[in-house]
Length: 175
Image 1 (cartoon, rainbow, N blue to C red):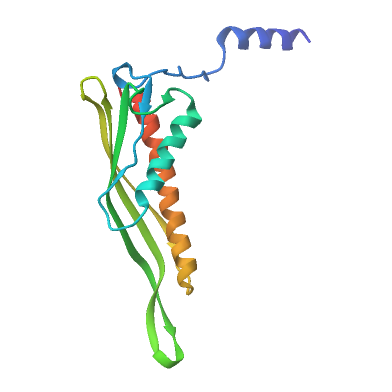
Image 2 (image 1 turned 90 degrees about the horizontal axis):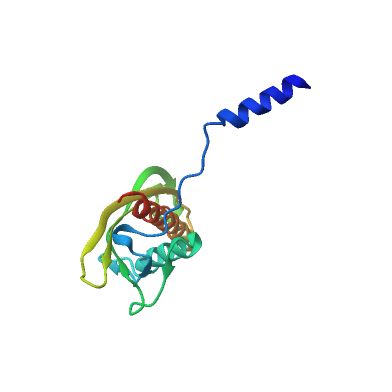
């Protein structure tokens, strides 16, 4: 019993190596509230800008570190652009399509996206933070066109969520 008491005392004195990181309550430039307009879409993929905008808004709302407000009330604005979007078949297979003969079909695709995101202070339009990020996800192909489109959208959605988590975290860390 005495050994347990000594062990607990030593642990409380020296502690373990873990500690909580300080949570910042502002972005670069001391910005404590932001407006997040719809991303610009520089690709041919209709609606992709909405995925990224929603993912970024959700990250900031979820974290509660700063407020997401209307443009006229916010200290800063986080603007984004979906710059590049690509789909590439990464794996193929031969398939006998009876009346059409043997064809080579894609088995797997890689979806890739590049975005640019900037934090701009509203009072003087100064760019306080800016990054270009890229990510990709693979997904398997299906013979059904609707299933393929659903898998493609899911891949883009996963990319958007992951990348906007990175944007959120980097804004707070990269002063």
